[in-house]
Length: 115
Image 1: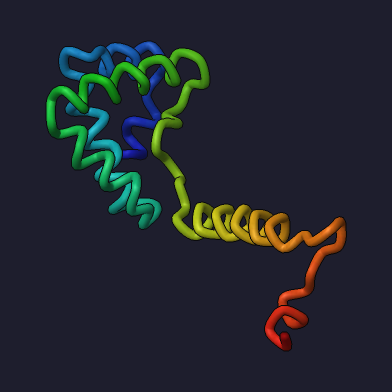
Image 2: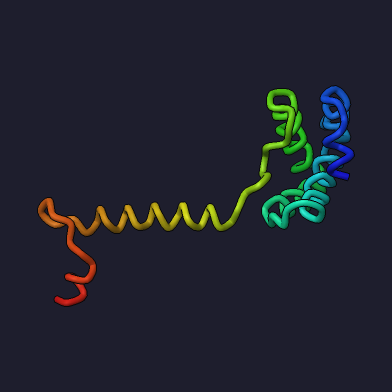
């Protein structure tokens, strides 16, 4: 299904994404994207949530906007859990390093453990 949808012209995609029925296509595309291409869990979760008409309506509006501007879906696609975890770890390391500053000097964690 994803290959079929990707092969359509931009005008047809926009018509299919009109929010009245677009939430169905948004949900199905994300679910099939998970099955056919990437095992990207956040994409699957958003696809399942899009089955709920209110959430699907909002996501289909966002999909419509991104389809008009970028000619592709970009809301909740290719979100890698590992990338998010790595970003959080990097931010945490920076926060810990900032908290270990004593009178302008960075205190090494090994030095703290030895005390």
